[in-house]
Image 1 (spheres, rainbow, N blue to C red):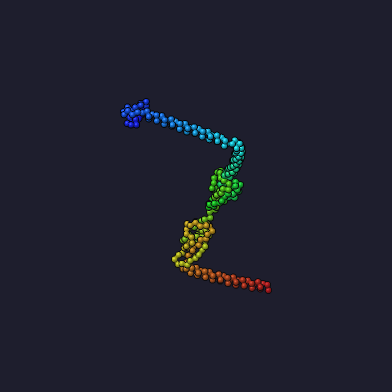
Image 2 (cartoon, rainbow, N blue to C red; image 1 turned 120 degrees about the vertical axis):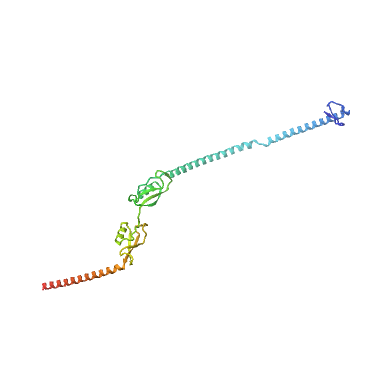
Length: 284
């Protein structure tokens, strides 16, 4: 399409005159053809220059890369990589050996079977645990059963279970219960109180207290309350009443008994002296 420069009307490519204003297109076509030729020439020159430049660049790159350097670098790198690979292989093998040794040792230490020592004496149980490379400690429990005294009643880890070396096994051992319950002896006579305390294996101490309100020779106090548990080595003190009214009668009886004893002694002395005189006369 040809656009008229005078009226801006579109015309066909081969038109020589504008169909609207009659403008002559010959001069414009010649100018356009000249411009097109110039542009084609410029493009050809640019393409030729780029081709020559690319050729020169390629030639220069081929010249710069020497062949002998590449061949010399390859064997050095391959030897170094082989040495590193061999080092890592040996290192991994060594680590596997060490890990297997440590694992076996750990398995042996943590695979010890705990022996059953219930029913054995404490001395026998300690020997059995020593042979099994196990440690132990004793825990005492009081018992009244004579058959359980000095015998292992319980153990902290069940027999047949697995544990590690030098594990501590707590052994519960029966010990005689030496505790006794204090009976109530207040109001008893001295004889009744002492017999009751002797039956319960309780040691006692007697103290007297003068009084006129309580009956003579009866227990009015005890140092430890009734029902309390104490060790059989502990001593209880019982206080016995001594009535002063009854004591006067007993004192008179005691003086009379002393007088009769003195009279008897005098009579015996007189008899002895008479017997001695008779013996002397016989000798003469």
